[in-house]
Length: 331
View 1 (cartoon, rainbow, N blue to C red):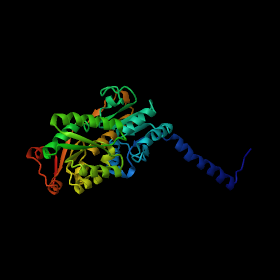
View 2: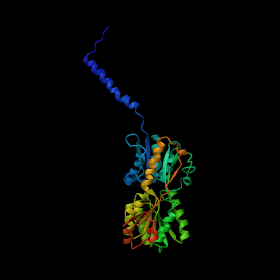
View 3: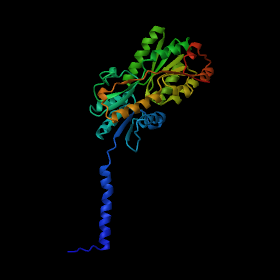
View 4: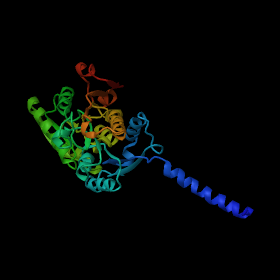
């Protein structure tokens, strides 16, 4: 028996088949991994560092929007929001959580024991309880540690060389991140005793508190300031540098961005380099490396940047021994 199909029926049949083709094609496409990016700062404060994180991913052939997706969670410098944001990423079953600072790393670790976590911290990750050891982390967490808290004593020594008459030094800490604040305070107090210096600890967990801290230093006649390694302060280099000039207060920071913005000088690891390395480590996990067996990377390169323009405005001169060690001099 011959069955005759009319033109209208044929077009309808073909149209129905065509509608199924995209569904079949999508079903065959590989699933794109999703990175959860948990950051204590705000998005507007993270332009350069976020670009560096993407660069680390791109160098390993991971391109956002092509073969990897990223779910961003910004705590807007509100430390208490981190546990909720970390829990949300866990609920969304992301493939991995990238935690670029100590507070976000601790929040992520508290939220999951199964999803891989890649952290950055300027403190000792073993002492923080993030990993069992540097060589064999042993769980779902690994990452990068810099020397920024370990060299806090060196920052104090450098500041003392530049401002030898300052007998009391201010220390700016962020108690919203208590673990990191404790490490910074302990490190500088040990160093201050050997140098015969007094330390005045000032807490600043908001922009207004940073302003108030500088005003308090001026009222008490404190001669110099050490800014501690903390993402809250890292994101406020412009504000800190402006206050240095307003109050004519010599200050040293862990990050180069402070010096470029007009601060006096800085000594520490490259923030941009750390985020790039964080992206590279994230890529390793995405490619199947077990975080339990991926050693924590220890960033050992420390850079000294000096702003001679600011030194002139403050009426200071750097000793030749300090200038000779500088990696960058802004004139």
